[in-house]
Every structure is written in C-alpha cells, then in structure tokens.
Image (tube, rainbow, N blue to C red; front, side, top):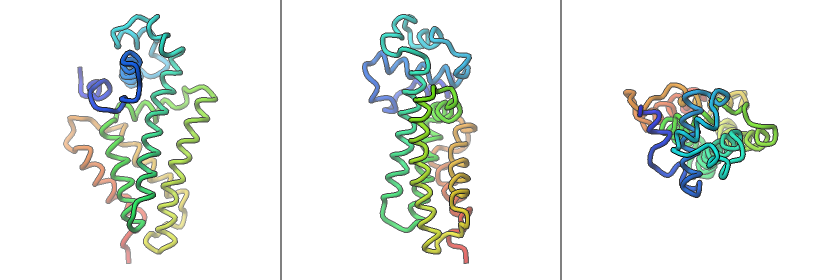
Length: 209
C-alpha cells in the first residue's frame, strides 16, 4: 500500500463519525478508489472489493456510488467550514486570524491530501440536490475567509482593493496543496501550512509600508 492509500484508509479520526464500522470501511475504500481511478471509472464492485465486502453488502449502507461521494464531500466540507469558522472567531488582528486560517486549512489539505483531492475535484459528479448542499457549505467557508480579509482591508492592515478576488485567490492557493502534496515529500503538512500562511500575508500586503 503506497503513502496515498495509507492516508486514505489509515488510522486517525477523519471518519470517526461514520458508523457502523462497515460503513466507515466503505467510505475509506471509496476515497482510495476515487483518488486512484476517478469517480466515473470507479464501480461499486471496486469499492466493495477494497473494503473486503460483497457488492450487495455495500447497498445496505449506501444506495448509490453518488451517495458515498456525497458522504465523503459532506464530512470534508464541514471540516473546512469548522476550520475557517474557528479562525474567523479567534482573537487577534486580521493578519493573525488570516495566518491562522491559512495555516490550519492548508495543513488539513496536506494531511488528508487524498480525501481533499476527491472532495475538491470530483464535486461535479454529485447529483443536483447534493451538489447544491455542498456548494452552500463552500459559500459559507468563502464568506468567513472573505470577512477576515475585509476586516484587514477596512483596518488598513491589508492592501486588498478586490476582496472577493483576493478571497478566491487565497482559497485556490490553499486547496491546490491537495493536488501536489505527497506524504514522502520534503515538507511536512505543518511546514507547508506555515509557508502558505506567509505567502498569503505577503499577497495581501500585511505589514507593508
């Protein structure tokens, strides 16, 4: 099993709220399969086989492959929203809050890069109702980050004339970590988070004369 497969199926509490154990095994197997083969090329038989179960057993817990993707996407996007919400509510200057948001957001995308790739790049495979629900979570995350940047612009901490555009650029920079990060690379998730926090602060002109 390679590093990405271990991250998708490994220990930790990423899927702790998924119960029972069989449903959790199917989620982990689906993440691994979607990341490796892509959503459309993955079959329910692929997922069940990776989980050590029969295809019939999968349908006890998830009616469709799309329902599995929705479950994975929901958990991932709720986590992203929680990270941004905690940063937005923290004490400190706008620069401190922005740095904290980016550092934590990027670290999560690096630590869980396989999951993050699935939830970021397979979004269009969701059905209309599930897509609308997940994109609503994304908009809430966007608004929280936008408010931090707006606070900095209003206080003079940041040079950000286009706050919506800057917000989009920061989010794009952060989520792209999931595309290139590997567990055997030369930087740890913490180090990437610190690096990106510094890059974003420079992007918004924090501390500039």
